[in-house]
Length: 471
Image (spheres, rainbow, N blue to C red):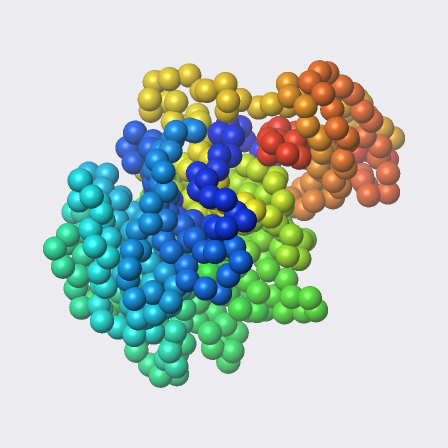
């Protein structure tokens, strides 16, 4: 994959919205939605830090920047062993609706804000064995479409629709005792018809993805989207762009010792799919997320090495089909399970878990354009690159940069494939202007590279820039 230098990102400083004492309560697996004005709504699981296998609860908060409501407990006294896998959507009037699965009853529960309070949690259907949460989408007629899986011998995927009065009877996709499917996601096309992507856990088929779409009268099982056929295709996510083109990302569990988790992307329509494209495949990138806005594709990645996750990265495909190098939204350690959302104003936001807390960030450029306000200085980069000279170079080049707040500075270098080539801790620096040398050692063969500077504790990073080594 030929990657271009990074486009300009201006994301807000990550902010902790869960505000829990993590010695007592830990937070996990967020879901996020954004309304027309840019106000964010976030849900997540919470559990006692000293009892990870005990009950989990569904929490909710709403806000923007550093002003957020006090988190409230939504799952109430449902017959819970654990309330897991929350997902949140907003209706056409901005009302939030939250769904999750309950391990005690095996049901999918939901609640929504009716304008003055949250409704009592109720089950979508009396159906035991529901597992892995629920995924939802809202159509132009304000209908809520939901998909989930049942963790039984058949491993069925189910669908239902809510008209703000009642849910339709759940419909199973491809009921067959020989099929075991799980972890679905759902998206709507321009006709408000739902599409469902899911994992098919059949080793005889190489653990492929399975894809279903509704044609206005019935559900159709389409041909399986392509995958690498090297391992289990897990946790797929779907988004539908212009001309009803379907865009997919998923986690491929490539076997080995140790195993390897790589994020892949493909797009298609009417059973014609692009060749899968892998991201940052020299490190772990599980559970990717995807958003499509018009003809642009946004993929959120959680890179890591082994069990150590090293931030949230965003890579973008422009309207001409060119991919840009992944750029970090945060490089904080132990950051994972990113969730992303957008609205009809193209405001993009994301939430993730970081050290048992829930953090969020958003695209400040898009939000400032909608609100007619300048970008907050809190969202501006805290570190900037002045110049790199000479460039190209044979043996060494001097990099000059400016820092506005003290922190540890880290240099990262990527090759043309977006693979991390080098990471160097430059050291702790106070505010000021500095310079250091990049040497063309044996790790930097002749070629084109991209580099940036990161702040270890604050999570900021400069946009990627290009340099050339000529030995």
